[in-house]
Amino acid sequence: MSAQSGLEVAVSTKKLGLNATSGSKVESAAEFEEKKAYEVTYRLSVNDILKVIDDLRAAAGIPTVILFIDEFSSLTEDLQRRFTTLLKSLLGNHAGLFVKLCAITDNYTLGSSVILQRDLFEVSLDFDAFVDRSGSLKGAMAELEILTEKIVRERLKVFANAEPQELFDDSTDAWIELSRESMGVPRTIGIALQQAWYRAKGSQRAKLQKTDIEYGIGYASKAYLNQMLGASKDGVAIPAYIEDHWCPEKLSQ
Image 1 (cartoon, rainbow, N blue to C red):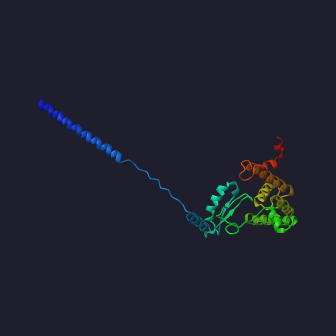
Image 2: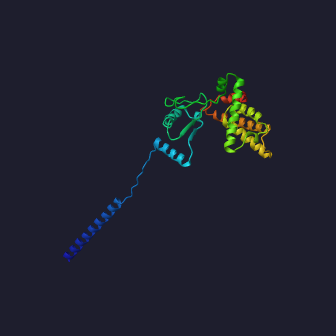
Image 3: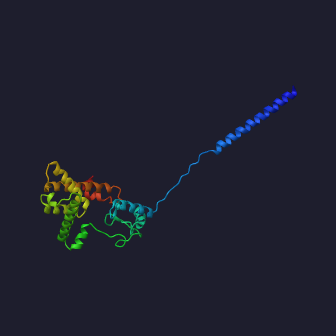
């Protein structure tokens, strides 16, 4: 009886050992079969971007691509300097890419990377620049009228294949009014004419009358005033005291 009991215990012990060993192997296999994930990061160089732009340009069959950078003055001085460092690597490329950078006069910095009249060529739209070139206020206004007519003519030709006489009742008067309002800024001309056209279309008129143009000019003036007052609140793009000049009623509060 004792021998049989001993044998049973021995056998049971061996079974337990086997079971324990098998369980250990199963656990080890489960740990070994853990899934692993890998994260791969790709970095594009400026040359890679230029190549993609050049391929797109060639596929579209267009001669050039213009990179339009607006509201540059809204950036802080530090961000402007950092951005121009990147911009320098795009200038002078041979991929048919040209850069147009728009900023407020005397409220931008190009750092040491970009130099005016070497890397970028300044085209000033300030009225002071027109006065300097023409030598008189009267001559400056005449230049602005010529510029305004040229902008409208070219855009009508491209987008509507039309002449100014088909759009205005009196195109000569339109150049005078639009040039005084826009001061040579194409965007302002566009806003004024857009709103003038909406008004004329609403009245079922085929041509813009003087009252339509005056309405468009008033709309553009109000829109720019609201934009300027909004930009002056943080004082980055436009100094905060500008609001006091344009809203003097606040000084009495």
